[in-house]
Length: 183
Image 1 (cartoon, one colour):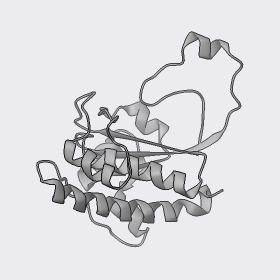
Image 2 (cartoon, helix red, strand yellow):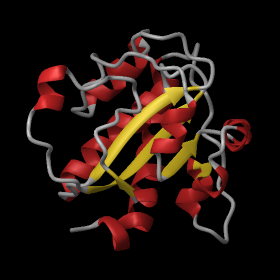
Image 3 (cartoon, helix red, strand yellow):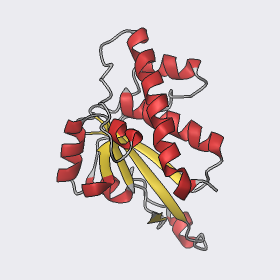
Image 4 (cartoon, helix red, strand yellow):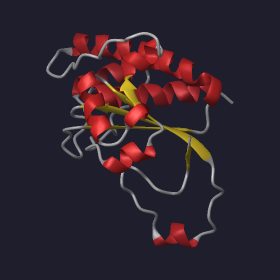
């Protein structure tokens, strides 16, 4: 678990007013980073699904972020991803893509890539044993899970399949983390 030290892996710096204020008590958080290629489909869906599920479970000290290995900064989530998330009651309209940066990997206690190529790149960035594919982590240490296929370019039905797959994998991944994260 990481200690919250007022650093934001997405790059925001505290304002002078924030830094002049009395420091907030340090809390321990568990930081999860989801990684895909462009950060407009799979990883933002995973981030949004995880946030909703963490809130549903009442977990307070878990932070979630997503990024892409080849993301163009500031792009919205794909319209298909927004639509399938909206139908499930999850807001994705405000998402803006982020390029994966080393400080994001450093921030994360667990980095979950959508495929093995993402994990290889994460290893090069120093994630080491904190990185796994979402499918492998959800399946457990003795089993091998599958990669989450990229829905980019597919129709809404393809995105719906990806959403449902992510929902199941994230539920299983959070179940594995429950012994250390549940209140």
